[in-house]
Image 1: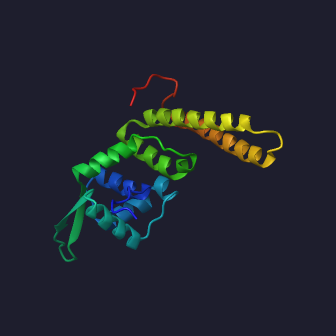
Image 2 (image 1 turned 90 degrees about the horizontal axis):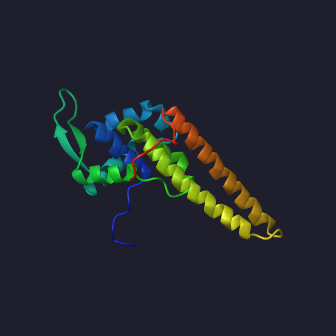
Image 3 (image 1 turned 45 degrees about the vertical axis):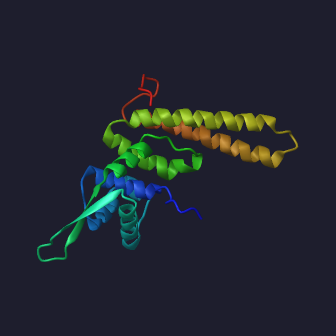
Length: 188
């Protein structure tokens, strides 16, 4: 295995995003994750896993913790983003997902934070461009199949229809966030 550290997972970016809004201790993060219905529909994290991820993010230099004395209770470590953590979170947030399978969890997490940051429509437009490329590639591969490759044709038809559904959902999501994907948007 490579000695370099693995890139953070979506759940780790969610934690960075929550801490980016305001510094918090682990229990506050746990409660916020539970209270956010949009995120809790796709993610569930137990307290031991949460604290393990917090430790990992601190070791990677993405979070820093400051002990605050507890009045009548144990001290708490209040977490905040490091400049590196902020940079990684911002880069992740402004990048479309690379695979259709990442739409359900990673893209929805990005969309949650992009809405708060005021650029949900731009993220949707960027993701739509990527989806169009997926669709073009799938259509091209489908056209190369021969009629006797029925199993492959069935697989590609399913994937094509899935990406079309994603495009339709992205169009509707743009309307839901109060914008139209056909309007002018800044380039990344």
